[in-house]
Amino acid sequence: MTSCSIGIRSVAVQFPREIRTNDYWSEKYPNLAAPVASRRSRIARSALANPSGFDIWSQEVAPYLSDRFRGNVERRVLSEAETALSLESQAIQDAIAAANLQPDDIDLAIATSLFSDTLGFGQAAKLGLRCPAWNLESTCASALVALQTARALIQTGEYRHILVVVSQMGSKAVEETDTLSWSMGDAAGAFIVSEMPVNQGVLATHIISAREAAGAYAYELAGDRLSIRTGDNASAIAETAVDFVRTCTQAVLDKAGVSLQEVDWFAFNTPTAWYASVCARALGIDPARTWNLYPRYANIGPVFPLANLDWAARGQKLKENDLILVYANGAGATAVATLMRWGDVALGCEPAPPLSSAAAQTTVQLAAPEPTQPAEIPNLSLEKLLATAPSEREIQLETYLLGWFASSLQKPIHQFNPQQTFATLLDSLMALMLKSRIEVDFQVQVPIEQLFGDRTIHELAEYILSQLTLATLTSSPLCVEERETLRL
Image (tube, rainbow, N blue to C red; front, side):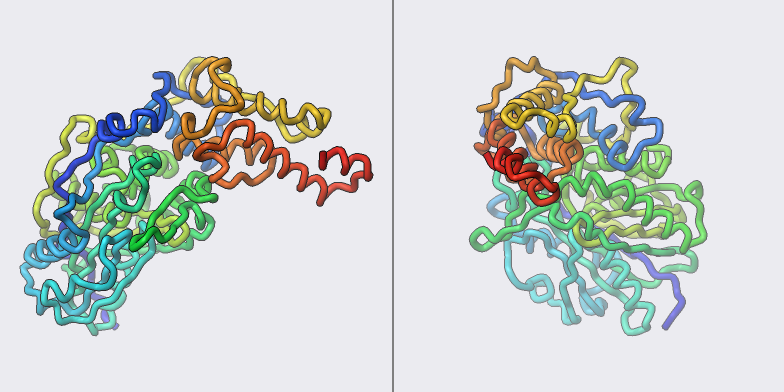
């Protein structure tokens, strides 16, 4: 076992040629999500005095509720002439060349490919690599988990240069009529892990289980490919985001003997437009010490650590000997923080710039509470509902739901009715918020499927009432007459 410094020697990223803007959905699916008013939902000051993790998430998401596309601006998507393998292969070639190595110098290759359009293994054969190769996957945290694995293997003395390649082809994994497709981008990246000069490279890594977010996404086989949609446990992403980044950050700083103030830069995976803001507020850091590439790439999953490092180093923000903390949260798998002292890291080819100035915006801005009074929200608790006559509970629930839509979408309540379908009202984000609100107010679990497609407000009220009925029947010592009333 060696005690040498080990870290990233070179990094390269590759993106498809096509840059897809929001106009694609506006023109092809004009009714996919109705435009909302320009006003933002407000958060009461009392909720911000001592904010919980979900309060922080809610505060940072609020400015995006008036944006039809929830902060999505551009994303890179595979064309018919491109494949995941072609992007991965180019990234590998660039990383090897930038490191001034030859393919025969690589001792081991570790690969992660999410939603690939090809089955099996192809990079090693295509590039003539003769080294061992295996797959490693930990969802969006895969790149940092692979870096930790490569570092540990080099420390054994068995390997000198390890190649890691990661990719995500998200655009093909989601139906275009699902608003989740707005946030899915395609990308590939590669990096070489080798010995570094003393005191450079990875200083410490801390990995925790993210099992609390299992089920946040649902995966299904659709023909010859894996598809993804919002899962039943989607709210866990919001509920755990703050705790995960705080836990990983504090632990990795303790391991390295470094304070939060000593870290020069923070690079966060950004599965949403507001995720970097959530992390910055959770850690209490100056948002100028981080950045947000989501507007130009959307969610590129495990490739984000590489894209962040490449962008920061190429733009002279990240310089040699700077301390940088890189964080990634792989929903349902692992959350990881890696602290490294940046070395003389070689870069691959520069990615094409974004099309619009909005997509080029990388500044992280924390949301501020508005001085005006918060928008009124429906007020109906489980206790109040159960105190209502059984024959009136469905009407109470419908009124509650109509009020929630009116408040959240900033429209008059008369514009909504119980027979409206969720397809015209909710996207993934709004569905997540409604699901969380119902579960808090009524202490009943609502599968995310109940909030999509042709289901109506009336049907959701019926579902909530039926779940409450079942819960009451199984937990309360009711008399026979009360049980019969509840069944009816």
